[in-house]
Amino acid sequence: MKKHTLILAVIALITMACQPVGSGSYRGGMPREYHSAYVQSYGRCYDSVPYNVLSLDLYSDNLDLDDSADVMKGTGYNLYLSDIFIAGEALEPGTYRSSTSAEPFTFLPGRDYEGTPHGLYLLYVEEDKLQSIQVLDSGTLVVRDTTNNLLDLQFTLYFRNSYGGRATYKTHFQGELTPKQ
Image (cartoon, one colour):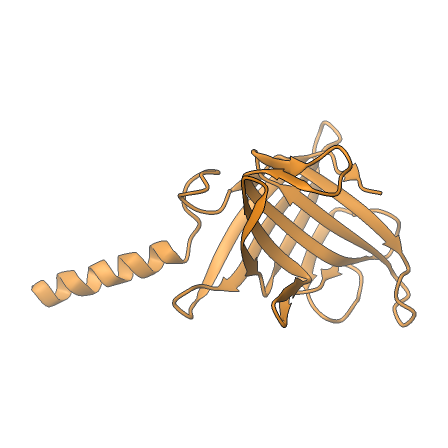
């Protein structure tokens, strides 16, 4: 009986480690929603890719950009997706998947290049200082229009947790995307 209880306790701990905890609480886990989002258009910035490229920059409730839109201020999380490939000029409704194919409705997966994150990653900032970086290696983004002309962004993202296993991070944003210069 004791062995069975110990096994159940270990399974419960592993399961909790693989899921975000809380609803925006920074000490309890990654936020389940973001409150501000910026989009930046790079046009057709790659010679070998005939599609337009966007980036998304999302911020949790106590973190945002300063007035110059250059520096993060506050405490919270920043979810960043670079290189979202689109056929048109804007983010269209549909399902986007992480891929290195550079096809429409894809975005680059996260990678760590010698300590610098690229593609898809999550930053934790506390009192204006970067505290941690989590590279997110794959996932999906579902974009929907809402009835009041806002965008609903649903993310299901994956990463390696501190135990070496795969973890899932689900979060969302609903609102307008602010153009970033």
